[in-house]
Each structure stands twice: as C-alpha cells, then as structure tokens.
Image (tube, rainbow, N blue to C red; front, side, top):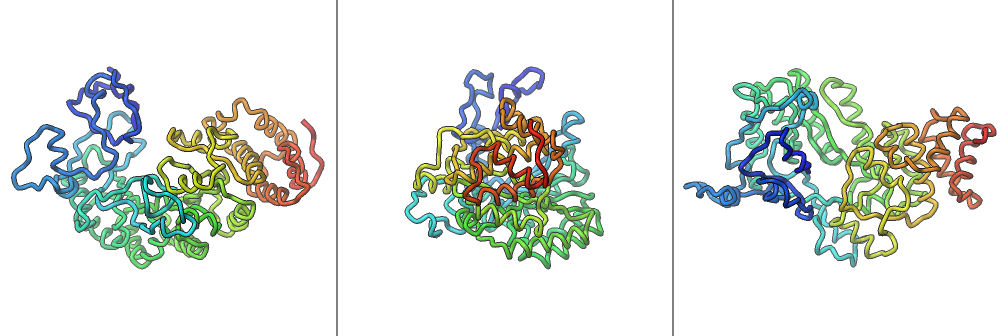
Amino acid sequence: MPDLQLLAAPQYFLTPDSLLLRVDPTISLDPALPPPFGQVQRAYDLSFRVGWLLDWLGVPQIPGVNPEDWLVGAIAPSYPATLLGDGLARVQPLLKVLGGRPCGYHQAIARNPLYEGVDLTDVRRSHGCSFCNWSMPDVSAPQASALDLAREQLQAAELPSRSPRSVGHYDLYDSRILAHIDAFAELVIELGLPPSMFYVHPRIDEVIGARKKLDRALQRFAATGHRLFLHRVGVENLSPAENARFNKAIDLERVETFLEQIDGYHRDFPETFFCHKTLGYILYTPWTTLDDLQISLDACDALAFQGSNEWLCSTLEMDEGAAITRLAEKQGGLLVDAYEDPAFLYMTSSEFNFRRWLRPWRFADARVALFFRMIVRLVALELRRPSGDAVFAQDELFAWSARLLEANDLLGVSRVRLARALCSALRRQEAPQEPKALLIQVLTQVAGRPLRAV
C-alpha cells in the first residue's frame, strides 16, 4: 500500500478528483488527509464490475453495456501514464496483463486429513495452499479467452508505438496462459512487439505439464529477442510432512523433474529463459522437526537451489486469515503475542516487507528453535545486509558470533555446511542447549582445530 501522507505531499502535485486503491479493508486510513486521500474507495480485489465503477464515479450506466460485466474485457485498455524521473525507468516496472486468476490450484483444504476438525469458515482461501491469504477471484468472465484478453492489452500498450508507461516488461496475471504458452508466443510475434520480457507465476506441475509447449515457445522467443521469466515458483519444502500441511500436492520427484527441465532451458536458451533457482521456500513452521530440516539439507546440493542461502532463514508467514493459522489455533501453544527471537524478523526486514497482520508463532521443538536462532545469525553475517542486520543491532549473541568467526578466520565457511553440523549436533542427547557453547562445539568440529576465544 502506498504511503498516502507522502502521496498527498505538495511536492508530488497530485490533485486527482477520485482515488481508487487496492487496499486491505482492515487497514485504517487517516481521515485528516486532504481530499480525495481521506475519502478513498476501498477495493481489495480486481473483480470490479462495470456497473460498480460507473456508480462510484457518478456516471450514468452506458446503454448496451451490461453493468454486471467484468471491467477486464468490457472496457478498452489504455496506458497513457508517463514514468516520472529516471529512477522509475531504471526500475522497469511491470505492466500487468489481466485476465482469469493468477493461480489455478484448487485442491480443497477441508479434504486434507491434517485439517480434520479445523474451522475453516472464515479463512480467505478454502482451496489451494493452506498458507495463502491472497484473495484471487476471477478478474474477467470465466469463459473469456486468455489469449484474446492478452492481445487487446498488449496492442493497447505497444501499438502503433510503445506507450510511455511500457518498458516492455509484462506480468501475465492469467494463470491460463501457460497452458497456451506456444500460442501466446505466436501472438506476440504476430503483433510485431519489440523484444519484451514476460513474467509468469506457475506451479511446478504446470511447468512440467506444459513442457512441449514451453519448448516451442522458447524456440520462437529466442529467434525474435523475447524473454520468459518463471517468477515466484514455489517448492515450499522438500519434507513430505511439511508440504502435506501446506496442502501443496508437490513431492520430491516432481521437484527433481522440474529442476531438470529448467536446467535444460537455462542451458539451451541462456538469453531467453530465466528462473530464480532458489525458488520459493519455507524452511520453518511451528511444526518443523530436525528430520524435516535434514531432508532439506541433504537435498539442497543435489537440487542446486542454494542461491544466496536466504532459504536457510525463511519462515512461514502466519497470515491472520490463512487456513494454516486456524490449524495452529486448534492445536494450541504455537501462537504467541510476540516473536521469541529477532531472527523471526530477519527476512521481512531484509525485504522491507513488514506486514502487521501476521501472527507471531513459536517452535514446538526447542532444538529446532535453537537451530533457527543460530543459523539465521550466521547467514546474516554472510550476507551483511544493513536492513536485515538492523534486527540484531542490540543483539549480544549476533555481535559475539561475528567476533568468534572473524577471530578464527571462519567468516567464509559454507553456511550449508554449518547448518548440517548444527543439525547433526542437536540430534545428539549431549548437545549443548546454550547457544554460545553449541556454536563453539560446531565451529571446532568444522574447523578441525581448537578455536581462539573471544
């Protein structure tokens, strides 16, 4: 959500008659803001109908136009906006190509045996991934052709000449496009678009199922200078127990097939195909066990998704309206008033993604809590991101760990190696439960020599 106080500042010269923001209805707006910022029309999803918009604008209904029609498909798209300043142009903001919905996964959470007896009546999503709190209604008529909608919007943005708003980066909101990606590629070429980047947000099984069509699309894109980016692809976890709780319906075999497929695309189409190899990963939940951690640590080398080791810090975001939050409530003892360690805030701080409607939680297994407490600090000392390190600004354990690693020339040691050693140590009954003693033991083992004290 934008900072309305900032947008209303005189230096931005914003004087609209009306303002429509996609705002969560639970967020309070400052009534003291000048008009129209203090009288914002709230709309949390994009499923606006023609009649609703005309009524809000105070415009009479249009003869021959059904007020119940979706805006997408009923109103001609237009992109007259201009990017102000060099900064926005450098950021290369995406234009969203609307239609359908961004996720086609509809497996009912209530049918998952792990959710038997869990009250799901007030969750934001009753189907799909249990941690998802994103309302995803159709933004166009279900029978509307994904390719026809894309054609209309791409033509408006690019032809007869590229709109000032477009930088040739397109976010394909409609999940149906991937199933027709070869036909979409032909459409882009037929329209004569200048070389562009297209972002899609698929599930792993959708990519596997569309392999032949992706092969054809990438060949055509490679010959014409277009690029395809698989964005926000979620593995979530390699532990069957964790993924079952996520209602994810993805197993290790599918992950391996997917990674083999995208490795081939990276090799064969290095200038055309892009996909972050770290993928979406949730390593920690309240239920995580050392066995769950071991599965991920054993597989990460073979699957080659280490990336920057951020995945070693990734915790479940327990959204207020998510089904998995209701599961934690039912089981009891997992939700708390405040996080027990600043490490829980490391990733959100690193990404500037603070979300005040998240529910703090704790680990059921104290050994996993200790593992998490230590490895996040060790990864933070590797990445050294000021925004992330800020959560440890007054943390004595973080400062001490930094001195210990530096004094013993261990700052560069592999964090995955340290994570494996930590997990192995915590499996032993005699493992120290005091963080400093545990880290000294693990670093001594990894270094193969006594440590210099600090």
